[in-house]
Image 1 (spheres, helix red, strand yellow):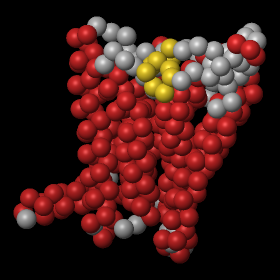
Image 2 (cartoon, helix red, strand yellow):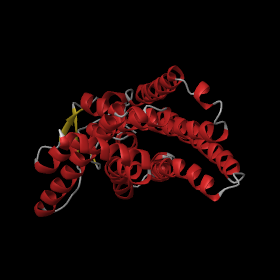
Image 3 (spheres, one colour):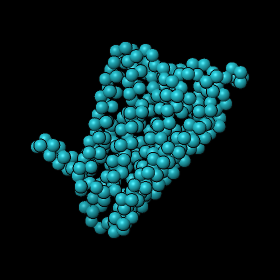
Image 4 (cartoon, one colour):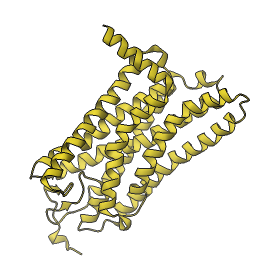
Length: 312
């Protein structure tokens, strides 16, 4: 335990990133750079396609646009700094820069958990209450739900950072990660981080488990309703509107749950770094593909938009 006289806040941290050979570093830069550009392009295309096609001006696609917009910023908070660190020897990040990156990253992660739950609730209303659905999911209510997702993310992140920001670091610390995440910062603090760890663990469970329960309950009710549909074609059509969202939920929750719903004592740097690549880089790349490949309306609108653009 360090005494208070030895406790000083550092000016910067060193992000170790991926410790590999120079040749592999170049390969990683090219691979992650390409994935980042594709992710931006895919999500921006979805936003534009939904915006310009009137038949996609529905709550389901409004929330899809929100998801794409969120993931554009989600990857931008992490990947550009990571790409820079792959190429340069100086991998420093200022203390303020580290906390800023962490704040926005936690905001986007928490917002996405809640947004996915809102999207599940939307599908539940659409399938279980089709006649009342247009009246319930008005544009005003959709805007309120979207704003609620962002507000909850911002508040949750602010609470977590209020605890982490009080911690002291006694020397220039190396963070064995490619971005500033909560567990690495808790591990390298030279003061008692038990309160910050407890707050992080409780908030992580709330932000993950409450939306997850909403998703599970929504799909239980959806499946129960769909099974009562007499025609096979009707059941298939109902399930098809949910399959894309359910796939995205499984990908996002399975990777992030492994990382954030565990105490600091269970944290393993190497395994978490690999899992982090999945939900910070791979999942945002796959999400637009999943929605485009498994949703006929989006595919048709995409063909129409591209055809109009090429024709023009």
